Amino acid sequence: MCGIAGEIRIDGAFADTAAVARMTETLAPRGPDGSGLYGQGRIAFGHRRLKIIDLSEKAAQPMSDQTLGLTIVFNGCIYNYPELRAELTDAGYDFFSHGDTEVILKAFHKWGEACVERLHGMFAFAIHDRETGDVVLARDRFGIKPLYYAQSAKWIRFASTLPALLKGGDIDTEIDREALHNFMSFHAVVPPPRTILKGVRKLPPATTRRIKADGTVTDRVYWAPPYERRAEDSGLTRNEWRDRVLEALRVAVRRRMVADVPVGVLLSGGVDSSLIVGLLAEEGQKDLMTFSIGFEEANGEKGDEFVYSDLIAKRFATDHHQIFVPSGDLIGSLPDTISAMSEPMVSYDNIGFYLLSREVSKHIKVVQSGQGADEVFGGYHWYPPLAASNDVVGDYARVFFDRSHDKLKTQLEGDWISDTDASLDLVRAHLLGQGAATPVDRALRLDSHVMLVDDPVKRVDNMTMAWGLEARVPFLDHELVELAATIPPEFKLNDQGKGVLKDAARLVVPHEVIDRKKGYFPVPQLKYIQGEYLDLVRDALQSQSARERGLFRQDYLQTLFDDPASHITPLRGSELWQVALLEMWLQSHDI
Image 1 (tube, rainbow, N blue to C red):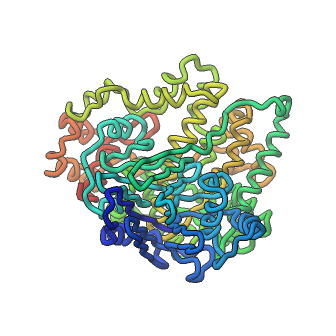
Image 2: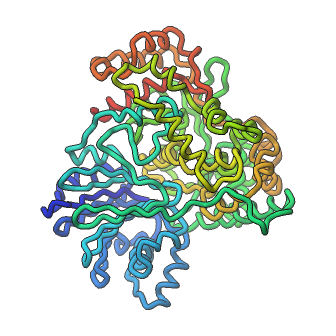
Image 3: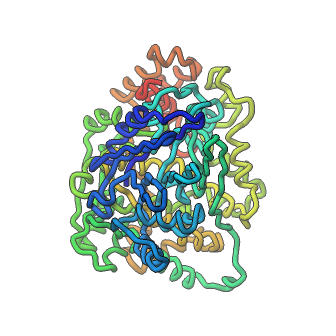
């Protein structure tokens, strides 16, 4: 796992290697093990390396193959690279390294942009073709690896993080009003191509982009699984679906053990991470490192789930590390957590993942994590009511949106209100698109391919990579997701959600972690803001820069200051934390 950056000149001038060097240096936490810079006329690439596969310098990047005339910078991991390497060797290609980066390079030469369809893994890469002058950008199917870009009349730049692009200079940092609407209404999810800043965009998942020398851009979406039933699957029983899911998950977990360093697990104690641990134990993994985190209680709400993570650690005899964070450490780490965000993200999980990753990185470089299971297998509370929905757009918005367009008008200053209900329009377009059979299928597709990408997946990438830790997510194995998309919704909605996955889990892990109330990374201090936390957010929102920015109405902010605990969103988030987080993120990056 790494960080990548680059500049592509479209005005015929030489690329600004100094700007690329600044961007690359900003990415140092993502790749603490090495750095490289490539400049060739109008192209400059930068790379920061985290050594996971092929630890030698032969796998250093930017990587060029002079015979093929190709240069690549790549962030991610290709789990089936040994199989692809064997196929390419049979086709006559010679290799000078032993890692996955060179495999992408050769695969691109043989199959062109279509090579991405053969890749099992997570990736964002840029390839420069010396003969044509074209640059091709690509992002994996779920956007597990980020890829931001900016464009002027002279250049196109890209980077693994938004702050890295800012260090390149000459970026329009005005707030994007539609993105602000998404942030405030669509539970802080700002889908591509937008970001909160007008001058920065992001390549959508499952997309390749070809950039010609004159700046002409052509995009291709290479993956969009149907959420529909297959005739050949009619009549499959609950147990038959269970067995198919369990086998596909076994394969997904096994794939993500590919590494030249040890691989551990972030163990929350929930069914998803517990199942990963159990499957790794089945694979014969010994001395598997597992890690859990907990926080102090607040307002009587418990701040850890150690009872469940301890149970799993004991059952499978893992090398378990339990990390407890006192309140003083929590508030002291908030500024660095916010600075590590590529975009403002309100989930309390961010601080949990940030501090957990800090401790995990002292022991190990790669972990598996359970993100994606809820979106793929129907684990959220809003799915069951949608089974009988006659208005999937309205019913989804009522349970997921933080506020309506009309309510937002009473909270934002007038200049910042989007002309239309941008979030509802966006959700409607996704929900009503072709290729989903039922209202539940429509919601699962939206959450898996839009919400998941720009909330849980981005959160895990940002917080783990802040400490040079690679996180792998087996529940987002694309073949597993393709299978899950065909499963009739009723099998997913069993047992208060994730029924088919729970059925599979019962064959592997203790029932105590399955038959319990759904858990999260609980950080109650950020939900019930009081004391020093209230002072922190009030200072940010009443600062001179916040007043000059003028995003929020002062009467709305005063209402939140007076009684923070009474203003909780439908998804149990603090309205005060949401608005304060945005302002603190903007300040942390001098915007």
